[in-house]
Image (cartoon, rainbow, N blue to C red; front, top):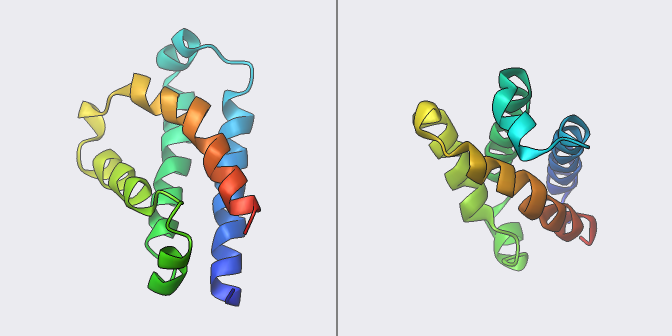
Length: 108
């Protein structure tokens, strides 16, 4: 694995860890009522999506089990339609998908 991809994995995991730290012991209703928490988590999700664009194509093809397309798609949706974003979906991603993504990245 190239040094560039190694750095990108570490950065992505750091953003996941920040989201997990921010949202730990928080219920969905509290999340939905806390604009600062929402914005902090969304910012980190945006960063994850940005990093997904930087991984080498060969690396992405080798690790096709990682949802690169969904990571980029979420970033685009958050940037271009922030006010229309389903925050319950964001909450679901935070609570279900990020732990899987972290495990996938940790295993590389």
